[in-house]
Length: 160
Image (cartoon, rainbow, N blue to C red; front, side, top):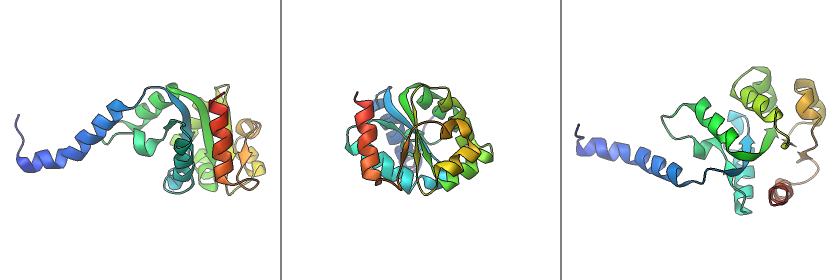
């Protein structure tokens, strides 16, 4: 099958995305679970701060290639990450109650030994109301320390 020049140009970003994905290492230091609504805000900020500290992060916004099955890519990301991080925000708490993708990620992450909740713009009490298991894990709270300090502590954890 041959493509017209216009079709080739339209496929270039997809090809580049696939090539970039292929060049990423398989094992990641952390899997960042977050609500869809937080992808451009707090989740992106935490992702960027961690990567600036040399932490490899599985982050759906960069690791799910256009046209691939989202749940399967998440499953692969979970399997290839050493530590789970859950960015707990009001949006995530709503999503978990709604039994969406975040709830599925959380279920898989709760089975791990190393899972760290990061509470942001909410409280541990609110988290415990929605997920007593996650709320029982020791974690960090951005009301007590800035996101930069949270990222530094997480980076230290994965380099142990």
